[in-house]
Picture (tube, rainbow, N blue to C red):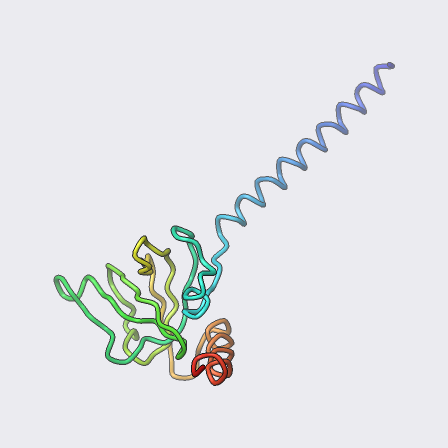
Amino acid sequence: MLAHRQQKLAIVLFIIFGSALAIGLVLFALKEGINVFYTPTEISAGEVGQGQSFRVGGMVKMGSLVKEGLEGAEVNFLATDFCNDVLVSYTGPLPDLFREGQGVVADGSLDNAGTFKATQILAKHDENYMSAEVKASLDAAESASIEVCHQ
């Protein structure tokens, strides 16, 4: 093989290897940053594996909020989509607008007992806002609850 062909081949192989490496790194970064969203009904149906990191969203069920520890550092509540409930446990500061009857999105994972161990709690920020994911899920659950929940 001639020297200039070897040089061109080396350049092409370097570009292919570099592109494959860049694509692999981008896919790895995207995988780490993806937060899959589930409703309490989907969690109750077993669509989520234990230890898998995801988001659960719904409403904080009225009468379910229990604060324990110093100044309520540990919080347990039920997240509901008005069809099924998921027990959420969280340790740490809560958003100022977090309360019963309000929309909530929590990041975390399920433990062995089926309790959602939250690492972060997000609450809606005003009376007109609800995340599109939560709104769509609640609307779907509400329409499906007529058929599914009452059977």
